[in-house]
Image (cartoon, rainbow, N blue to C red):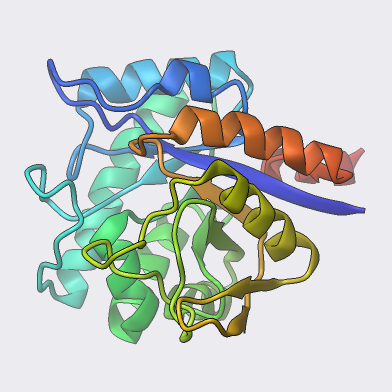
Length: 260
C-alpha cells in the first residue's frame, strides 16, 4: 500500500493583501507550510493560519524564506552560513510560538523559494538550515528535494527527512526545478499534474524538460498555494490519489498510527 503526504504553502497573505485560498485548500491537504513573515505573512496571518490548520486537523510546518517581501522570496540573495542559520531559527521560532499558544505541535520545516533552491545545491547553507532545525527541535522533519544537500544535511544530523516533489512544477534532467522565468516552468494543466503525481508516487520517476526520465522520491507532494489553479489542483490531485489506492496522511498521523 502506498502512502503520501500532501502539503501546501499557506499563510502567504500580508496586511491588506490576500494571496491564495487557504481556508478551502486546507480541506484537501494533510500538511501546511506556513509563511513566517520574511517572504510573506505577518503576525496576524500566521496566527489565523495556524488556527485554521488546527481546526482542519492539518499538520503544521514552518516555511522560512529570504527577507524579500517584494520578490516573494523567489530572488536569490547572497547570504552567509551564519545568516542562513539565524534566519531559520528566527522564523521557525516565531511560528512555533503561535502553534504552541494554540495547543498544537510543529511537525516540520520546509524552506521557501530561493532559499529552498539555494540550499538544495549548497552544502554549507543546507548544513546551517539543518543545524538550526535540529537545535530548535530534533524531532522536527526537514523537507527537501530528493538526494539534495538539504536531505543529506538533515540525515547527517539525525533529523527525520521527507523527500518532496512538486505537482505544479516541471523538472530539469539534473532533478532541479525548471526556473520560473523559463517557458512551461509551471504546470497549469490539471490532468497533466495528476498523472505526473501518480507516476512519481508509484514509479518513482518523472519526465524532465529534456524528455528524459529522472529518479524521484515522493514522501510528500507540494501544491503552491499562490498558484492560479491551487484549489483545483488540491481537489483533483487528492481525489486521484485516493482513487489510485494511495493513502494520504501527514507524517504525524503516520507516527501516531505506528505508536498504537
